[in-house]
Length: 276
Image 1 (cartoon, rainbow, N blue to C red):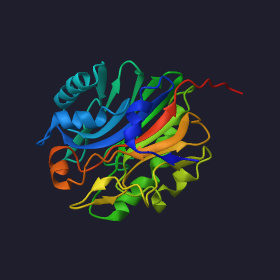
Image 2 (cartoon, helix red, strand yellow):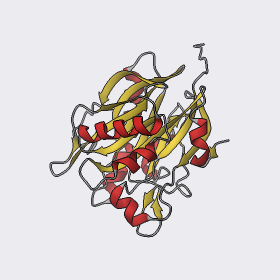
Image 3 (tube, helix red, strand yellow):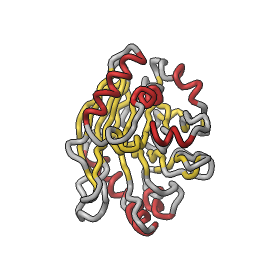
Image 4 (cartoon, rainbow, N blue to C red):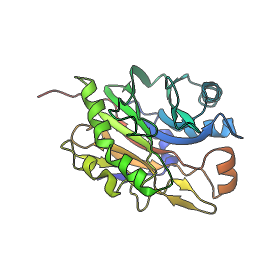
């Protein structure tokens, strides 16, 4: 049974040699606003590998990396996508940042190679990582918001193509984690085909309970989530969560850190896998 757990326990769990915390965080224009980089870094220091959306430039990652190393007294590394994606009015990068003592980047796969240039406003991006004995492809996504919900639903319906693309691009690695800000709850009809995949793909956070974005006086929506294969990814321990760092101070948090909260899953990293 999956288990939602508070992050107050997570800093202890992430230090265990046989588990790791993988997070996804919409960073709200990291590098272009009044960001409190130190507090932002404290938030993500709770995790071992963090996928970031809405990164505006590489310099912001250099600042965060330095802060993380000071906060945790350990080495960190980052990777930023080769170019930014989006519309002519707005573009952003994807990025990953991780603890070097626990996580290694194995291979940059890059952007989803869409057959139709209109499939995604911002094409998902994938990198292969290894944590202990667990290696996997971590795909980041930031779906269109647009003026109509129909646009979001159409993009959601194409994530089955994204999953198959990254699963089939590596003849050995079949463990694919897709995470990010989908601008729709994961139980939306748009994800129906993905959730009926033969690999038994499921979303992790409960869209009815696990709210991840900040409104004026409360959390308001469940747009952030993970999609993983229940059939392939046996390393998922069933523990997951939303890190609520806001202390109900929504206006300042949105101004200086983000209008989202990080989401995370715990994985077991010492499991041996055998092909049958």
